[in-house]
Length: 422
Image 1 (spheres, rainbow, N blue to C red):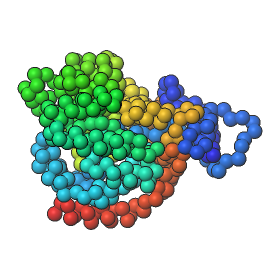
Image 2: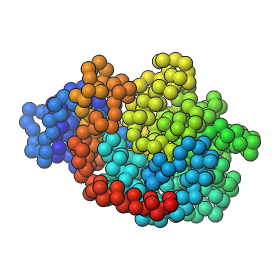
Image 3: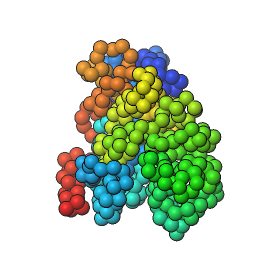
Image 4: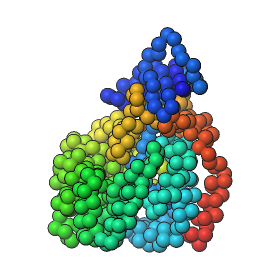
């Protein structure tokens, strides 16, 4: 058992109230939150928080971890050109071992910035899963299949292989996008989702061009089209959703879908600003992700929270358009739920011990007025002093305890990047 005491706790179980108290972990679960009994058991370790903040860890609800090799490589071009000229040709050269190494690099960044789970859509799920398990981090694999109907067999094989793969690794049905999949493939995925009672996820309405061309091809927007196909009979969600209109948002609300927004990526590629304020007002579930490190270029949920909030104020011309608390929830509890990690969303007894410690004494968080809003508007990954996943401390005070040696990972990633991009 591990005891955290003398601190402040943001459980997110009901609201964003910060309370005083202690938290115990027992194995991979939370055993106590709040007041402690007079008689204490023996602990493996006791951590004096010294007034600092304990809260649920971040969950990155949309990413492509293995794309670290293209960070700062594919720059200054719009999405379609970026994807088809700067990304796909180089990804075609990747081996499974490449993806494994580049995922390790991403995991180092996740852990040091307080993220313990990634909703990862990439090319070789087996090596992504291997890297995650070895490091002790959670990954929810999401298929990014594209192409024609015959690719349904590959999707089904992956689903069967990874759906109950490991306590740290699960799998969700998905496909890349409407514009990279045939109508026949989408119909087959809908049949599979209905047969398995499974949610489905995909990139959706990321750019105006994508959104409009779908209407020209199918007579309706991507969201309406997917609903008509029956893809979302058992839930799921969409990544980006920058150009969702009122009818699209109604589709999300009717089907209980999650909109996973990626503000930094959408801004960097000039795709636009997602209508998060409208979504929240209309009852659409919100989550946050970074997208991949080639289009962001960081894997930093603090930055997503900040941009998610302030960009809404520009979009709505309203300095109170979207509460900071909404983005904090979207980056933690909301993202966990979007990924199906319902026992990793809040700090409550019996739930998974996925948590972080934030040093409130750092100058960017002083003086204290409102801790929660301070995290969103002035917090940063430098404030993370401890990251725990499934009851194991994987990062603490600048050191990693996940089985990786950073300098060795950096050197190997650099060597492989040079081979792939020259």
